[in-house]
Length: 302
Image 1 (cartoon, rainbow, N blue to C red):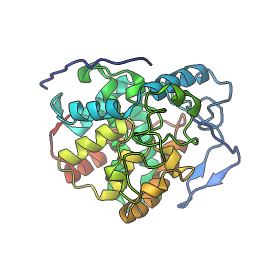
Image 2 (image 1 turned 60 degrees about the vertical axis):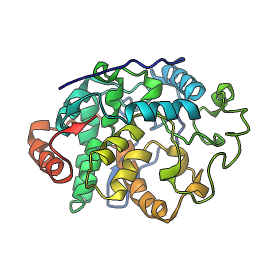
Image 3 (image 1 turned 90 degrees about the horizontal axis):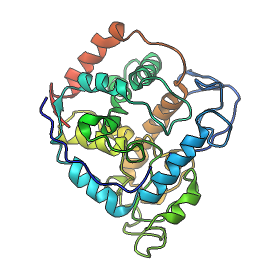
């Protein structure tokens, strides 16, 4: 692999709140566990778990630094896809070195979570192979935190995502910290629509920079043949303000309305499959390699 890494300059460096503990059954029969890997409620940003303090600190730094101009700069820099050339599976293995500090539900290597999600979806939606692969690759953009990609700080890689260039919706976790974001009091960016128009389509909206948008760019620019719903899931799976509370729906177009149906299905598996269930990687690897071959070139630019 040939690696060129200009080191960006950053400002500073910290999750959302959840709910019900009752047992829930998803659309296709997936049984939702009542506790995460730590024995706490899922996405509980206020409870007293061993990760809560660090998670809140993460979001404070994230909300202060994720500005419209920062996102444009990151997209321009990382959109060049000139850092590494490697396969999807090589990236999965590289991701083993990354722990997501914004996640109150998981402390396992990332490949464990990817396969937990993919296998749960595969069991309930056996004919949607594109969704199995989407589940496997949805978090690969977290390699941005790896030294081979410049080791971006976690606040620029993980966490809930949200639009920039318009007002920060109050449903976004730890919203209070946006008050220190330079865009918060900028009249160009702090109105309901900001730089956007009603129904403009989410593809035309800049999202806070992180692994979601980066993996979306990698898939799109490397000519993946995943359906648009797969790309939608990759880019917006951390956009909880939209798919949990309905915020920013006024920016969506008709295609977004169709794709979000798959995102809501995916998100339940993405969130609730975070457990101590172990996956035999070598046993399932041939299946996922066949899907990678179907939907991606052998080597990708990253």
